[in-house]
Length: 454
Ligand code: AMP
Ligand code: ZN
Image 1 (cartoon, helix red, strand yellow):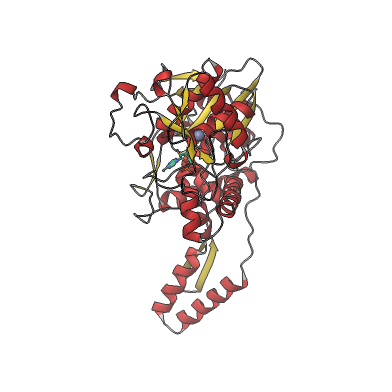
Image 2 (cartoon, rainbow, N blue to C red):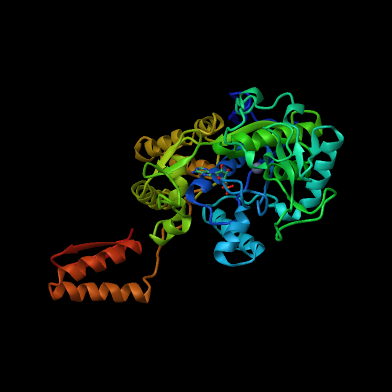
């Protein structure tokens, strides 16, 4: 068997195959003008789960994830997100890019995501984009407008709209769809491949059409085809990228290759936090660093994601992260007592769940039932958990933690003890909440306070 996963384009689960035994994967990467939030991380984890499952099925994977550090415009299409943030932070836009790119890699490492082979940056792939834009012009799929921008001619691509179901004739002018570039476009649904610099002074490059900067969609076509040898077996991104980003990418790439350039388009559903879409204005944007600062294992977030199918919208809460943290702690303790791991053998039940459109929630339920089953030997339990962990990536063989208390926490515990002796309950409660948010669990009894790591 091999992994069968839902393909947005054909609207059916499709098998991931590769004649060479090597599966090429492309995952749309972060726009590095800010920290990735836990929603973005859910999508980045999806490509890790796919890659790990493919490997478990016996194939190899070559994965590329781009870094968008130019060309991704703000929601009103007025300004590049990088330049907007550069003004806000009063730092050079490339410095902003490198800062958030580094934090992105740190987040991936904390989530135990196996790195891609390469993380090409858009700003360092400008020549590739020029080459592709020139080829599109030569093929009659793109044209230079009076405003010296280069546009893709949407009507030149007959299959436009097949991923998202947005047909060209239904895309009426006025639909929220990059109309700000209206200027020299011949048709309302055409989009810019290269934008003339105009008043823009930073993040611009010379080009055969004059100074300017690339559009966001062309970068993914250029980088995916260049670094994955002209063909992508599996393309991954969040559901919001289905249209227009992936629709436009498909039109560009297919116009270049003359064939279907991507075998499978996989989209992960969005993450909500405590019932609401995460947004700055709602003040509910959560980062992995926030999870860590509360004393939770970052892999607790990974387990929360695994407990939900990637294709379902999911709601995350502090409560579910806390519960997942407890589960991982318990599992690590049990794995440590179940004995020493010998060679892992295939657990076909788990493999079947995974290969069936990444049914990680069923894997978790299965592990929970095995854990409690007294008819299953410890060696069998250990094998099932270790086998699953090759994809779950929860680091279950890690020795249960023996963390040292910092001097600061020792002092706070001491102060709380003193507050209780002085019957200063208000101060004692205040200190309890500080200690708890640092990851400690405090209990009081007649013999005094005791603590443990949460
Ligand atoms: P961005 O950095 O905004 O370009 O987004 C990076 C990735 O995160 C893209 O694949 C988006 O589709 C995805 N994404 C954005 N918001 C969410 C969310 N709330 N839940 C899951 N994925 C998301
Ligand atoms: Zn992309």
